[in-house]
Image (cartoon, rainbow, N blue to C red; front, top):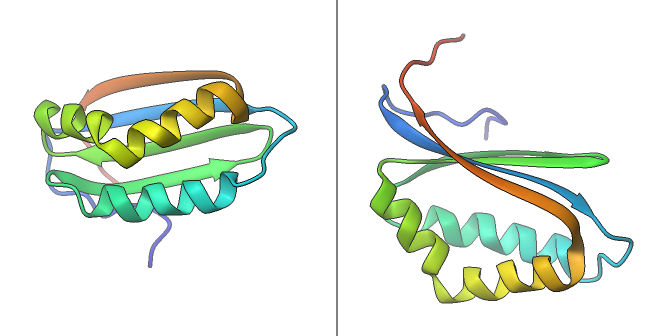
Length: 105
């Protein structure tokens, strides 16, 4: 499995989630892994890339805005979001962007 997501030709959408964690990370790694598994099962999911040191950045790729909306509302994901707000993150920001062009090797 590549660390760089294999996405189709644009246009598609990127959800960029940046976060700073609190000291209490009990259950975090397991939940994060489960969210990647669960996202991959959702209609419109195209891939994900994630890194974490002091600042964590996860970028998930989606075919359309409706798929992103459905993912945000997915029941198990909603529980994880609430845990993040209540327990794991001291600060976070979500951005949604239209990818109009990509290139690489």
